[in-house]
Amino acid sequence: MASRDKRSRHIRFLRSFLYASQGFRYLIKNEQNFLFHLLAGTAVIIAGVILDLSAIKMCLLLIVIGIMLSLEALNTGIERTIDLITEKEHPIAKVAKDVSAAAVFLFAIISVIIGFLLFFEPIAQMFQS
Image (cartoon, rainbow, N blue to C red; front, side, top):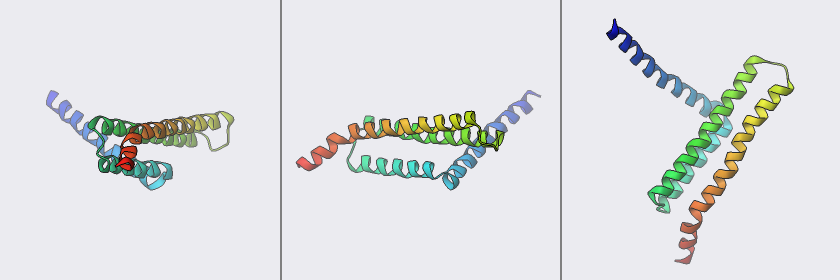
């Protein structure tokens, strides 16, 4: 019996990756903001490699990109959940959607500032050479 429970737990664990990949595909196909951030993040990583950023700076970039993409995914989840709950326009539903979008927007601003701080010195050195 314990062996069966363990197998069932492993199957549920593996299925969770399937569900996550389905969610990722949904975001790429249906959410233009997520796709924009994914492409921008890819461009930033490429720029970091070209400018030979340190491992610490690259880690910071990856963390910022990961948080940005995660916030976009959470925002989509909140919006879809609200859409499921009510088809009518409701002031509280609007606030929930607006606030979750604001969280993404605020972190996008912070991300740009962090990116500027991480890239400023390498770009400045490139022009001094």
